[in-house]
Structure formats: C-alpha cells, structure tokens
Image (cartoon, rainbow over all chains, first blue to last red; front, side, top):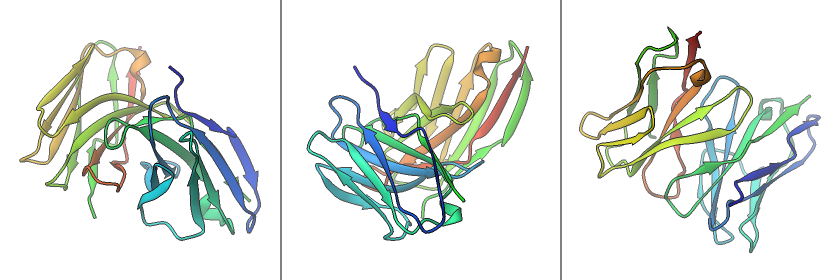
Length: 111
Length: 112
C-alpha cells in the first residue's frame, strides 16, 4: 500500500510569484485535506476536497486554491505569494472523516 | 472556533520513565481525536485515533484516553526511549468538512 506522497520537497519563491504543490493520496482514500504549518505551530486547516469538489475551508484567503483529480490526487495553488506564506505545507488523505494520513510535506520559502 | 491546548509545551525526561502528555479541547461535539508524532522538518505520523464513543486506545507502549465530558485527552508513553524524542500533536475533528484542529504540540526529549 503506497502512502501519501508530496512534491516538491522544498521550494523557494519570491514575493508576488505563484506556486503549485502536489499530493498523491493513499490508495483507497477519496478525501484530501491541505494544512499550513508555520514554524513552532500546529498545522492550520486550509481546505478539503472530496470527489473533486471543495467541501470545507479554513480561514485562508481566496488566493489559496486547489484541485482534486479523478484519481484523487490534488494540487494546492497559492497566488501572489507573501512572506508569511513561508511554511511547511502538509497534505493528508482519508476515507471521508476517518483517520487522516499525512505526507512528508513541502517546505516553501518566500523571499 | 474550536481550540486545542497542549500542556506542557516541552518536556525532558530520562530514558525509562513513564510519562503523560495532556491535550484539552473545546469542541463538545467532538467526533474523534488523533495523536500524531512529528520529527523535525518532517510530516506527521499517526499514532492513535480515538472515536468519540471510545474511552481509550492502545498501541504498543502508547495508550491514549478520551474524556468528552471534561474535554481532555492524554497520551501515556511507557518505558520511554531516546527514539521517542519528537513533537507530539493532538488534533480533534468535529466530523464535518472543517478538517482537524491541532494543538501546538509538546516537544519531548528523552535523555539517554
């Protein structure tokens, strides 16, 4: 059974640029959630996708957007990057509201 | 807005000791609570999941309890080892599509 994978591992961008992060869900899981974790903090919920539709969103602005594909993999897009967007971005997959399994994360640095 | 608090923020103990990590939550309609381990700069590893209908779960040297009435969960680690050194996070779910609400974690150091 393949676990949750994320790419890239690390990314450096400059303020104002756009970034796309990718996530492949665990086999058999149809729900993907994205989280942002700032240094020294717990992860903060960005949004959740179920069957290719966003069905839940945390307190993040619209410049954070996403997609889920028919194979349940997902993308997180962030436009107009700000310095405060520097964080570890975590993807988690689950079968609806059951146990969530996390990927290794993407470390984004905005200069 | 639901909140999760973890105490203590950091803990350092000698190898072999039994220890308890605490987690409190404000969600009276909690659906489940999950404990995670996070190594520096890495993703989260799920340790235990407790459904709201359960009182505890065990996996090896780990035991997690859930008390909905008091809004508390504890993670008990028996016979601690240096490899247990990590940050431990608890997170609650209300069962909807609002994702998990996390605490800030307890940074645990086990001294050899």
